[in-house]
Image (cartoon, rainbow, N blue to C red; front, side):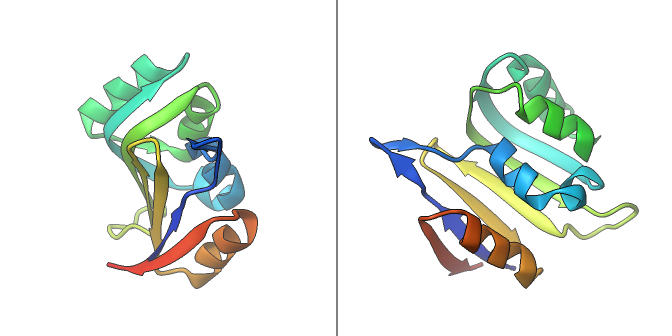
Length: 126
């Protein structure tokens, strides 16, 4: 999978969060099922997201979006998006130590949207 790393920041603080990426992905993110793992986060929905991360079950995209909107910060975590009934993910979003988001996808349009929306974006190949 190809990928990009987002490091937009201000005063040494990351200015991008999971909810921003999910909003950018729009209905494709909302219509997906998400596997969540290794999450460390703070905010109103943090406890619920930690429980989902521990359970290793897929979560509807709308549920993830609602939870992400009620977080102050996602420090670490992996969010793997699957189309309905699909076994292979279409996207992987990783929060990296409060300093970056890595986004991987085979869909070049998704990566292009991210490059256009965010300011500090670098490409990588996995």
